[in-house]
Image (cartoon, rainbow, N blue to C red):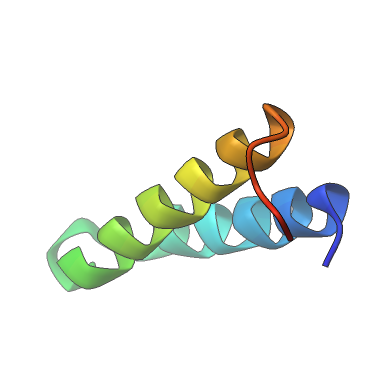
Length: 50
């Protein structure tokens, strides 16, 4: 998956998360989003091998 594809997938997931009512949001989803964000940032710095 390219960096652009990962960013697009991340943004789609963030929008779905934000559309979910606050009381129904899954804390695990937030953690997954932060992990995706970290992976994208690492890729942008050229440190990732994928």
